[in-house]
Image 1 (tube, one colour):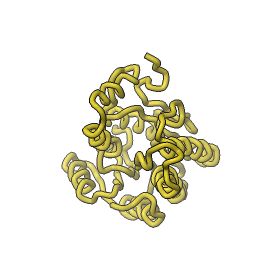
Image 2 (image 1 turned 120 degrees about the vertical axis):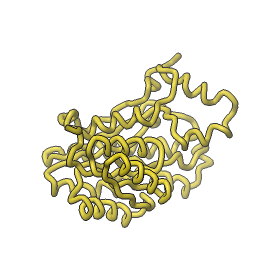
Image 3 (image 1 turned 90 degrees about the vertical axis):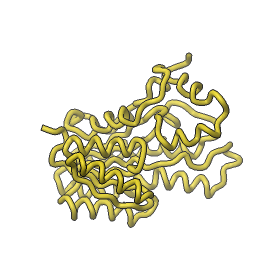
Image 4 (image 1 turned 60 degrees about the vertical axis):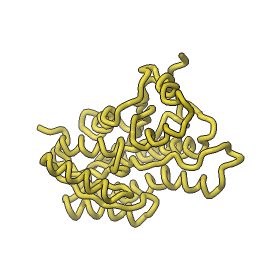
Length: 256
């Protein structure tokens, strides 16, 4: 039997990278998925891929910073598939970069809204729907950055991702007795289209340098990160909640 048979999931940031890989994996494991992102064409291609493989999916394009979008995702899950069991609040962005003195207040706020407030809005509407099903699993994409490592020029990103860990732990404490688990993954460097797009403008040797920061001396494939999300979504992790799970290839512990 498929691991997520009869489950309904919302996945944000699904148009590429980790979100895309997780959506296809969840669908293969039997979940009905509501996929979200800003790019309708990419979401439509994802839905087509899932449906051609025999899965069930629907796309809802929008901005995760918009509260009405968060509500629309849950309404779609309930209206189309009958409820909500799982939510992977994955959408995020590098956001405003530069020294703290140079980052604008608007840039700071936009980064936190994209990475942190969006997760709060997601949970705000996802939790009541999960309670209606008797429980569920909330999963957030944080980062090793801000949790175990600080990189210069990334204050807004690091603060937003560290904030996600705090949100995760509070949700776990609030909802555990009600059957809802909340956990965060902390990926290391991952070979996503978004990261690849940044490399052509980076100094020569940047990719090799980033790979070398990891104990495994390589970047993750999105599919590898998706496996960790599947674990936290499934009953295999039924006694795990409030965890910030490092899926970082050893970047947090490597000094070589």
